[in-house]
Length: 397
Ligand SMILES: *Cc1c(COP(=O)(O)O)cnc(C)c1O
Image (cartoon, rainbow, N blue to C red; front, side, top):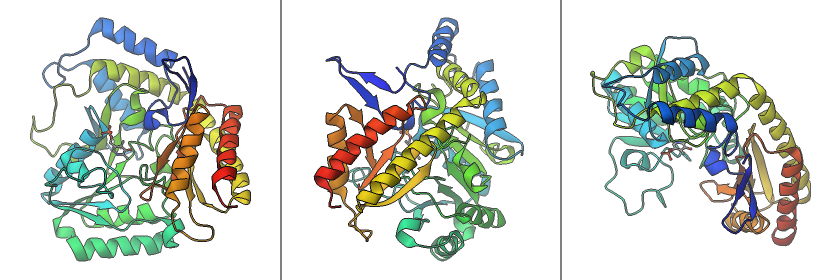
């Protein structure tokens, strides 16, 4: 219920991970549960491409209204985030007639064969699972804490790689998480993403924003792209879209979305009507605007509390994020040398106190908060207290 999970022994756990940013409105949100139950009584499946149904079409229209940009859009629904990434790549290749896809350093895009080749980390996502898909290139990202570059400088570096290692003539798409999730909530420097989008537009490359973790209210805006003034060609959604039911979407420029042959995109369970009904309930709640205010409140509470902790503990090297997507990175004081052991000790100490905290980061040295928007300031204070105790025990000041 809300931010709480009760386990088989009756322990109540404060869930600050929301199943990795899925139950954004909280566990068993009453409107979502009611919508899904009602839909189960009406229709649970037909196969949209054979026998379409209205709630799918209407959800596509609603996502088109809320994703960045006022251009004509279309949406295609699938079952998981990785499936959305795969389909975005298919669409971009069909549209451009080009092969290569560029992903950023510290990216995470999924666990299917294509997407595991796009991730920054081989271990554990690809190790032992090859051969990997061809024609994927990874290029430097913007990571202000580690590279110290302005958005313009970081974009120039990325673009140099794109031009020299791939070349626009072979490049179908650039894919980027506007705020990187598994990579450790890396927030790019201002103007970085728009510079990449501008370069992509100029060279006929499709720009894909993977908003699977950052989208739909999580960062206090409909989409994290808005925080950077970014209007991507394609926007991917999943995780929080149906508050726990499996659903994912690809929303994008109509002329790009229409590139595949009729029947070229599909899937038996794609756009399941029960998941779609739950997603409508999620959008109903988001459209009240209340979740955005809650995300802003959570951001204030977390940033204020973490900055206080950072004054006492120099191992907190960086604090970053937006809305209910906030993280801190643990490093040797005064350097960027990662302290992975400290992050896992803090997460374990929190779990022992009944608080579920997720780690993240390419160096496993980031603690990330992805609470449901139902979490209160008092609960956040308790969690920060437990983190402070763990830092007192394990960190050098
Ligand atoms: C979770 C995630 C994915 C993969 O989604 P699945 O539903 O697990 O396949 C892709 N991209 C990002 C940014 C994610 O956070």
